[in-house]
Length: 470
Image (cartoon, rainbow, N blue to C red):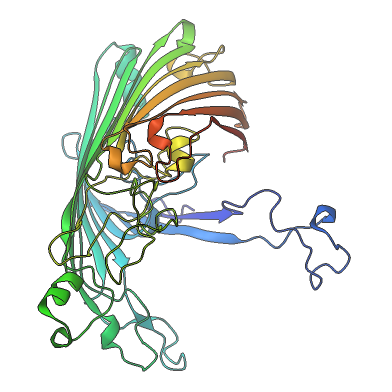
């Protein structure tokens, strides 16, 4: 919404977001007393409209001011991804205030301040405050970021490529996240005590990220590398009286967690034939693993596979162990031993590289690397070569993936599998898009379950996408 030449308001809402087609049949006797079986249902339950993002943009003489709840995308999207692609299920949304001064010698500078977590809040004992009020600022989580980019406009890129010149774009962003204290559970327990659920967190996390984009004539290369570095002062979930436990137990309950994670991706392709009709591409991605930990670590809240595992006295037996595909990498069974680090980098879940292995089984690229050659053929050509990006396009790809450490896999072996994806899409000039894709995963030893002796079988997936972007 353009309020004026210098003022704009942006709004994004999700309608039936991530709703499974065929779900919510109206068969409840109080909602539909005439349908005894779901197979006879002719109505669906009421849907929802989720107001996802609303933000404003103000253009001033000094620069651009942006504020509100907004998405954020950086580079290829392995760390920060707004999830705005047609087939994305996730996406980053921040409550942000940002300011970008005027361009300086082709470079753009932006300073961002995000409110990540306000901790415990209240509306008053009877709601008399009329709004939510933060109980204390000490348990708030914040993000401060500085980014510098040099990115050509679409017109500049087209002009340089037509003149057979290099297109050289890049950017660097440095994030700092901090949270001194935390209220991990309800601020008030059954006795009305506030203090027992306020714990020292001491979290300091740094996230430097850089991307590089090169283009010339018919060739393109984009790459990004990102880090998660830092520590959390203590992992405790509730406060306690140190004098009531032994020194060893106190040290065990208050141990911290360290992070050293690195991930990167590279995409390159070259266009051939008239109007750039044929594209040959190659993609490589890698996310660090966590040596000595069981499971990939993509879902740390998962209790392993549910199978009983050896555990210290008083510890849950469902912690991740041999044969588990995922679970927490943390182990505080002793005061000084165990595993007090999380070193596996997790790609943003809106960064999709396949149809089966990383998207559905692991849920993200982590603790592994992959190599994916691909081919795309559009008979009518592409805009980059004078075509119009309409008509049919055939897409083929094959991906090999492997873990860094065998203990991160259920099969205690590095090779994960070979996945083949084939798809066909159709686009019209008025932006209608249709796509049909098929995926086949040939699992290797890394996906076996050594705990139960179960083998693997070929996995299949089919995806149909119909969309009208606007």
